[in-house]
Image (tube, rainbow, N blue to C red; front, side, top):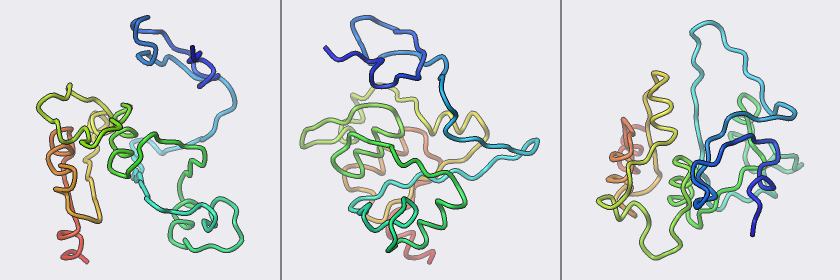
Length: 172
């Protein structure tokens, strides 16, 4: 058996149901802070999450490599927060986004979660958490949003705006 506390040694949590070891409520974290953010009263920073497929770490300057093939990414990393030990269990970018944004494990089947909107439980994740803080959310994809039903899935899960390759090309 895998001991969940070994995965997150600094997390303090309460199990919600002993028969479901991954279902827990995080109460606090201990240990050294990994990020400190000081905001002026009422200031809300922009939040940008990038899910990149085939982005080879060996050529990313922001994580310490001498030859950088990623100058714009490196600039964003310097100006914001870069998480270098983030791991997502998705085997494709769209499934990694679903797993990361909603804290669910992706299906390792031919059909993604997004193809089964009618049978999905009501998901609560980053779009809802940011909406509660007064943010608007947008999902931008450099491909066709109908791929793996991203258009239906992300509109169903609380995104205010969806933009695929057609809208992006028109805008720029």
